[in-house]
Length: 188
View 1: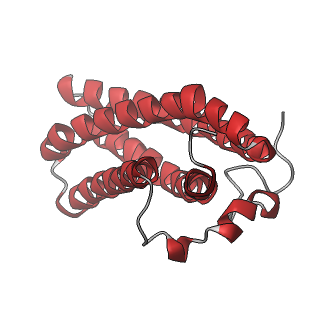
View 2: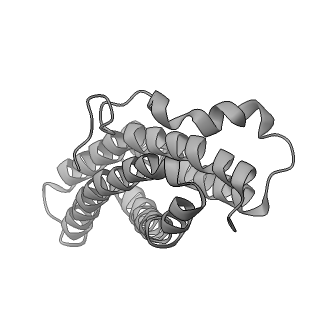
């Protein structure tokens, strides 16, 4: 199923109106109240991804300031590996376990969950590019290749390129999932 105009992750500026009815019933300003344990954990996981993105951007910023390719390699490669592993695992659990359960609890939100699944596909294309960029940078540094700085720049561009779509997805997913958990629970 293709995205409707304005629904594609790369161009979306917010959650489409048709998927906001749960958020309207349980808006973000009420999320400071006691949240269901699963909802709170979901937000904690998303905060971790935001923090990890910021950490990678900080490492790249430091490299751009000091030019220390060795330090960048030593710190960024493990950070990228951890980010890729955690985000991939998180999306697999969501798409494979939580989203199907949520479809039975709240069938009306099925198209919103489809949107989030399409986001996962788009993000995984970015993650694949990030993996390939990280590998190319690692191989260039280990092999003392003359283009190692170019590979670092390419990797840093990939990190920056993936930031906005990831942030958009995390926010939109929260706007569907947190109210759904709070209003409907996960047990039907």
